[in-house]
Amino acid sequence: MQDRVPVQEADLETLSSSAVQPGNSAGLGAYGDLEAFSDLDLDDLAIAAASLCRTPIALVSILDGDQLWFSARVGTDQTYGALENSGCAAVIARRAPVVITDMMADPETRRNSLVCGAPGLRFYAGYPLFTAENEIFGTFMRRRSAKTSAGAFTART
Image 1 (cartoon, rainbow, N blue to C red):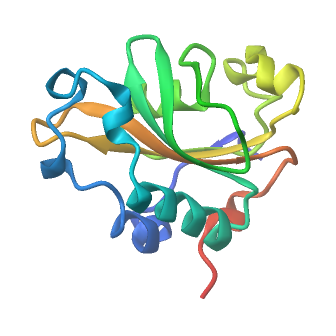
Image 2: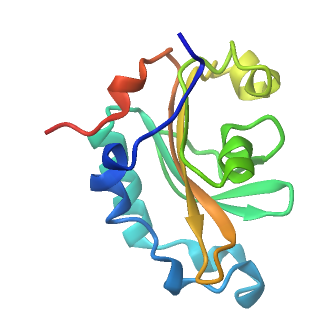
């Protein structure tokens, strides 16, 4: 079984239709303050993602150099994290959705302290968020502490 599974657009249809719309953001430079991205709609999106995808953790992350600011979050109090060795780094590099079914088996993410230490993350699914200029400004992601098949990522019908 592959550790990284390609995600079909149809798998994300329910979630992407509610995702941050590219035309609504000019990127971090226009705001100067990451707090500007905190929004009740984003919180609702994270709650819906956690419920629909049956993952205990869902986040909307905003890219800030080599850090990720978690502007909306469910299942964690963590407000930021390093981009290096994260699932989000793969999403940003590929400019496409990524599913990592076992983060401990993945050569990049297994070095992440949240994977090899507490809380022992194992599953990651992420979707890039784009500006109107087609630049990635963040990710929409779900994660959990147990290894999960890619099929578990799809929304309930």
